[in-house]
Length: 399
Image (tube, helix red, strand yellow):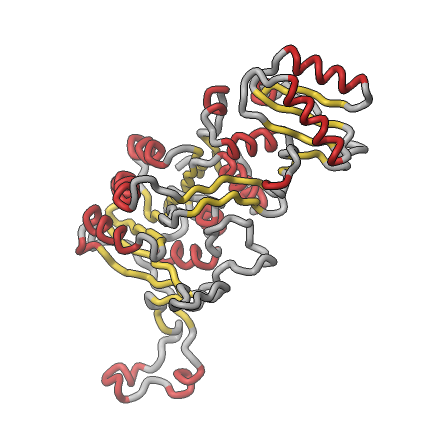
């Protein structure tokens, strides 16, 4: 690959494009939606980026599995014959996914059911606490790359050495590198603490230690790693650190923006070390975004800060703090056409309640009445501006 690639779009079509270009991956890791029937509105990290994270499947488990199957088939096609495939899931759909994976890869190409154990809050009163995830590992052939890793022996084993029960192996003594890591992982931390330095606020974020183990076991420096559901970008960030080439795919522009910032913090430079493709570039693409994705795009383009309290933002979706103005400025986003006078009037009320002296209403277009209302408000000492999305899209907006 000339450069690493971060793709914003549906992974079904993105994988198809990679296949057509002849790309072959050494390792594919995916952490797809878990069929948990939950819905999240998530605030990510210090930048307070919000994303609507959906994990719902109308039609039930069969619809979900078929949705996954058509994507896994594409992943199979893009995987090298010597490559490895890891699917990360939990109890919601793991047993259904295993049957589907056996069908796509072949039962004989199933290598491991890795159990990742962890601690954390949440103790039910009538069930055993669920404290593990499952990672299914497959290959395409028997000729696959594998680089074993080891962990230290226990103090007791170090003191005792190999006993006679080991037979002929007792004479060989303990391995200098330690004992091979097995398929039961209790030594890899899960991100649980709100003060964890890795924590970005994404609901299913995995630790870098987990991805480091997977990437080191099944790839070497210069190999290609693909994550088709890259979320907050842990797999691609670790691949970058370990000097692998990588492709990350996510349908969310908010996720892609976050991953871009995460990579830049590692010293990667967009346009030099990696390219970003598929981000919205037309009005029609912006109209098609999910409401929160559209709101996030607007706030990001305005280089403003996302409001943190989604349920009680008083009509303010974002703001500029006093580092930009002597007074704070509020932002309201409408994914609408021909926004009218009443919206601007209500926004004025929201600004006054928040004690802001300035504000921006963003929409695709505004009525004559909306412009007149903004002019009236300005005469009364408050600066309210109407901003069209087209101006943001083409870099015409100025604070």
